[in-house]
Amino acid sequence: MISIITITHNAERFLERTIQSIVAQEGVVLGADYEYLVVDGASTDGTLALVQQYESGISRWISEPDKGLYDAMNKGLHMATGDYVWFMNAGDELYDPQVLTHLLHQVRSSRPDESADVYYSDALFVNEDGSPVGLRSQVTPHTLPAGVSDTLRWQDMALGMKVSHQAFVARRDIAPDYPLTNLSADLDWEIRCLKAAKRVEQLPFLLCRYLVGGLSKQQHRRSLTDRFKVLSWHFGLFPTLWNHARIVWRAVRRKVGA
Image (tube, rainbow, N blue to C red):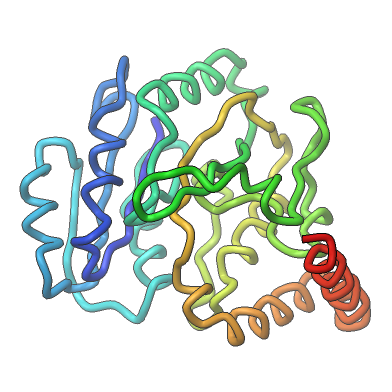
């Protein structure tokens, strides 16, 4: 079973598209094939009314004050009972109505000792109106390994987050808690999952539609500082300084090329 987790806080504007993409999944049964958890940070807008409207498609939900996004994500992790966890936050969507069936088929077609600890894919970036921006691997410098037979390694994250968080599904028993105060905690989480994984598999289909923007975009400067901290934790200070010089040079080349 897969635990899909949505974190919300005053997300009335975007939450419905996320919920609808999950309840519209075909060929799967809530409670048997997947569970859907909503963790709300005591919203004061119409978020809870939306949750209650779709309550028949939600396994469990809570609404209470939290210490921020990653505190809420930790709550979701601790609520989950599935074999795998998959975060799909307010505004993001499962790619199409068949994606959960495809993912479960991929997991279940392997023997238990051969199923991957991490499944991942590319992500389609979309605007607020749903119009496509392009694949993440094409509109950002974060290209994926060349083919589905290649294996993503934690070392591939040296220049930043290779895979969108919404396109990264991890076995629950290897998934650590998120550090609470770092805006790049999702990068740290992916690296730790990859370090713990014995088998990683790139999927031949898209997992999600990713709404451009988000917390790190809203606090861009601090996000960059926190990314440096995360990469220093895992790669060391001097390699991270060198890699950030490469990141800056790559950004300059892309800007000139554009």
